[in-house]
Length: 288
Ligand SMILES: [Cu+2]
Image (cartoon, rainbow, N blue to C red; front, side, top):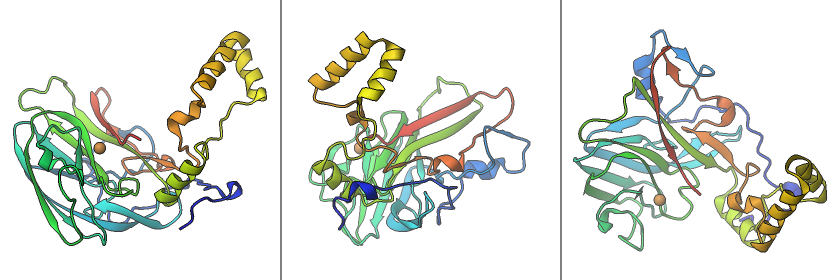
């Protein structure tokens, strides 16, 4: 395993046009819209995860070939897709999810932000043992909330390698927000580099991916914008905390490609609309 690449060989991700993520089905919503006279927000192509709805779900955890940056590599995903399918539930329903692990290593799915019994929470070592290779785990729990959430593997670095997806829960009764069309916007980040290497680099050098350190030169330009007094005050505050502003996002775009519904920036994810429509974006962000 590569642990600490020399700085001159830091990952240099130049994001080219996103190539098709094999195995990823195009959105059901898009299929329904095909052939209608719709305008687009941006470019012409769009890939979004499949939408699954109802009360029973069959999910398979496996690896799949992907190419987000121009480089072919392997992701971990759900039902041959990374991000995995968007799951639509309804508040008040009881859902069952049969999750089969086809990976060669243990895995898990944790339902992030869901208020559910601990045994169903999906955190290995806390609520259960995880899902062994070849095993199917049956989750069953009542849905007692609504909104937009996400799910992800809670095992090793599998979430970093793509094992995640969005959950949208419709309110049991009246939806207080009126809209004509809805898009789920799932933001995540992707590294071609092995996440274990990224982690190891950060452990050895916490600002390994930080290219925006304070310098005398940028002090002068900042001081021109904000005034010397407030620039100095700001820097002293960061200094007292023994931090640099980029510590908040310690892995930068040098290592990550930022994805929207599994599309790299230059793929230009688009939404379709008719003039005058009210469009709702249900956003789900995989936090760091
Ligand atoms: Cu989580």
